[in-house]
View 1 (cartoon, protein in one colour):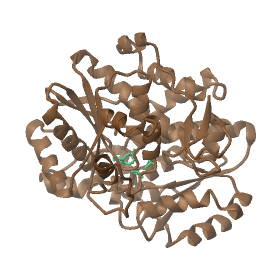
View 2 (spheres, rainbow, N blue to C red):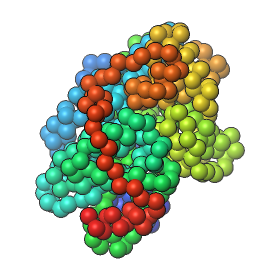
View 3 (cartoon, rainbow, N blue to C red):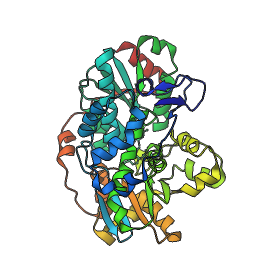
View 4 (cartoon, helix red, strand yellow):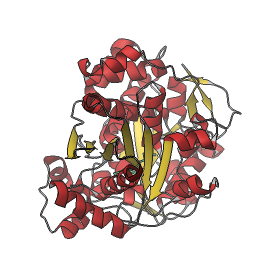
Length: 431
Ligand SMILES: Cc1ncc(COP(=O)(O)O)c(C=O)c1O
Ligand SMILES: N[C@@H](CCOP(=O)(O)O)C(=O)O
């Protein structure tokens, strides 16, 4: 399959080139030329397939001609070696836990898939590549873990100083080897803008091959569609119309969910739940897209003022606002709402959510006030322990620290401080 640039002025490319480029030379995001629906029988019989089989059927068309089927199967086996359970909260609400991977956030699948693909491509080219990644908290840790020790790949992570949780910071600053963390005096949006600028900087591009491991990269973005299929498999037998509420920041995850819907998965509606960084909820009210500087919140991984993937969502609906509205609602909640939701979820079910999942729960409840007949799933995108202070203080409960997190607790942070794009460029040219 070919991928084209959403800015429409760059050549179409194959999957491997789209992955190695990260974004197109005209700064557009890559998009698949087709999304071919899977057979109806696949969805009717989805319970009979393993997660690896589901993922293979879903992603094969996008990588065909580039990643042979046997290699793809091996990659998926490695990537999907943990569970994705839907846990019941109330009779018409479940939560899809996406935090059972090595860094305990939903980024692990995409990061590992992309790392494996790059590893496979570099076996034949032997070229070194520098992976740039901007993180508001979780992508950095997942990419660091997924790419650690991958030959021929150097990873440079940009994160906003003082705006990620202690555990998130340890996950992305303590691994060493081929991973470097740059601590940016700014917001996540500043980090993301620097990464995008680097792709246009001829001086840099003459010196090195750069790619991105954010969800702008198709190999990071597309595998996220698996989650929605895994959830569908588990709740289909309830016989109700299904809605997903997705805690959203850069909007890659929800966009992948919408691709799963295009593949034919029966879903009534998607809810993009955000914190006070409400660029998309405002767009859904006003039809005006006005990005703004991000505000720090307790659901920090969603502190994004200019979500990269919203353009892909608009493109999926051919920029038809009414068609988009039929499939997507978007609501914003503040930190007080989020803390109240953490308590409410705990009181009704004993379940300890994280602040991002709590925002997802709020969006779902708001939607279900008008649609009580639906079965709603909110995504638990990270383990609550990653936001230890907030969750323990809000619920007055002590959390157990899982083994994955204990591993980084005693390690020393190593980061390089930078304050602007020149700092990034200097670092890249000298390293
Ligand atoms: C825990 C958590 N929840 C939600 C999000 C938002 O996901 P997306 O950027 O795909 O909208 C992120 C970061 O991306 C995250 O780390
Ligand atoms: N919330 C993310 C922000 C970047 O999102 P991505 O999916 O585009 O990598 C984070 O945790 O870093």
